[in-house]
Figure 1 (cartoon, rainbow, N blue to C red):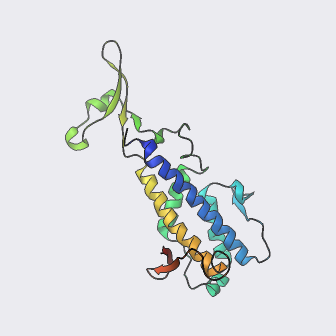
Figure 2: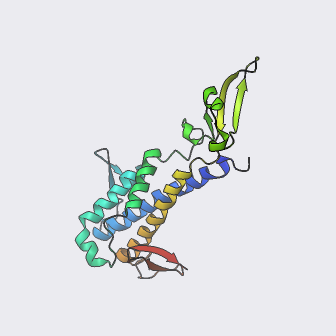
Figure 3: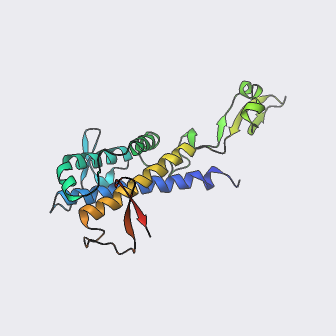
Length: 219
């Protein structure tokens, strides 16, 4: 179908979820090296009380908490070296990360469509009683796949929902927008851009938004 989940939300969510993870990991590397000169190894991340290599961690929650921890640990130096109020984190980012981590704490939810998870399917089980009680005036038209027996009795039915994953997609968009800002801003303020030269070579400038607490790209 033209509006199938496989063509719309699922690939978009997959790419945004992957981008959010990479934003966090890159920001962690930049931040750790800025506050720990001479240490070139990747930071370790605490997951369930155990230290794990950065490259082995895919959950956004542990990565996000690690970023908050290092910014908090070095908050005095952070304030001296930057003109941005980086802490506390924006509440909408906290909420987005929590929502994403709850649905996909291993980074595989959007990667494998065949994974056993009914929330990815457009077709939700619906009972005969629910079909009989369906009110078109208040609920709209019902689109469903119905399996009948030889007596035309309903054996099982599945309601088609074209707009699933909309909340997940919105959370991912919010997270990526904010994490992109943190990634760019901390690179510029703590590491002098992408190559430590004080400017980037992408022909772009970073501009303030709001009260000087958020970064975006300006072409």
